[in-house]
Length: 477
Length: 84
Image 1 (cartoon, rainbow over the protein chains, first blue to last red):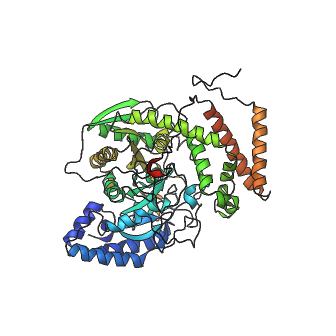
Image 2: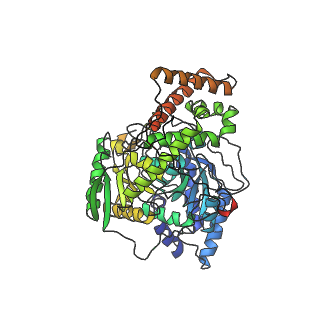
Image 3: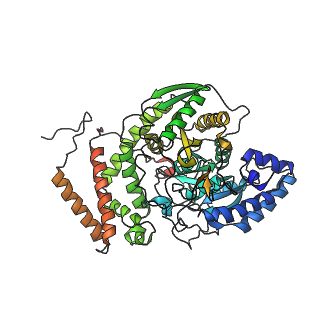
């Protein structure tokens, strides 16, 4: 097996090789470090290589596995960490502050170390996770992130680095964060699998706060199955995060479900979408019809966008009020971020609370709908990746206008996006599976079933490092 | 005599377009005052766009009927002796 093939294997396959001794954690780590240094940096996806930590953890993982101490499926598996999540002693720039470091470590980082995973890089984020507003991909100290499928396109944000390094086969998985779609949307643009688990499933302690009532951390991987394995390692109650859930979570079961699903297809979810996005969605529905029932459903007619805008406007301002009041936004990269969020200073408290009251209605009505199905389905985005050097309109109207995303964001319910084909210019398209709270296994099982039937996890970018240097599917870049 | 609030329909006062524009101008002025009138023209334009969007969003939310006892999506409890 050559390095290129190794780089695109899933976590279970890598685990088999690690336990059989065909490769060692150190060898796998060196592959990832080389690819991060090469393709990762070329995509502006890497903030800090953590070679010393990685090599030390790899030696330890190798010794433990040889001695028969098995910490589970992530033991010996390298990963990247979005640079809003702290790792003790390493820079945690939030995409904006190059010298920032924290003494304490994020709970998710500690949990991954306990699971035997190997931290190989802090990876790029849109500055302050995009929370001050941005309308250009170049809104980070890392520069504009490049898409592994087409280096002239961008990854979407704000989990730009996690999606890029996973999509390029530079790490098997990464940890991203999501407030209004920051896992889901980059997953769609880069053909990766992104899981936004139930709000509170994963502790946010040690991660930058953007919006207390919306922020979630979650896995970005090459398949839905890998997302489940990573979620199992990072889920759990944490006294450092008062929003964390006490419900236990286990992904690995003797017989995961692969058929007998009930799907709700969101009516009008392809309206305004690019033809290839619609076509791939229909193809996915045809495959899903072989393993379950499909029923068209109406999303409750509720003001998702307005509630999200007001909640984010108020909480993002509050989370950064000292920074904003001190004029800090003037130093941010994105021109829009310099003034956009200042408007939060004049957003009345009663309007924020009204938005949160309506949000409870949304959560109740959407939760009731979602509970009737194993998954609600819609395209993850209505478009494929846009240009790396092009400004886009905030929240990609026409593309972002998939209300299922905001319904899940506001309801705190789980959603996974997986690759479901290629669209214009050979770029990935995605499908989202949204479930009721705490039903991660149902949506993951359904997504795995789709991936298995359609073989989409075998799709990968062209080029010597999985990156299109000169062409994509034969077309010049 | 004042009428009791009802959740049948929203009674939130609707501003005229002129009043709404005047409110927006004042809000932008308040933001400027917060920042010692040091904001650049580009920053002020970004504030103007965002204030307009906020006002439009809140106006739509004002049309959403809510009863007096409908709670927000966060809860304050006395569990563990702390607000959590």
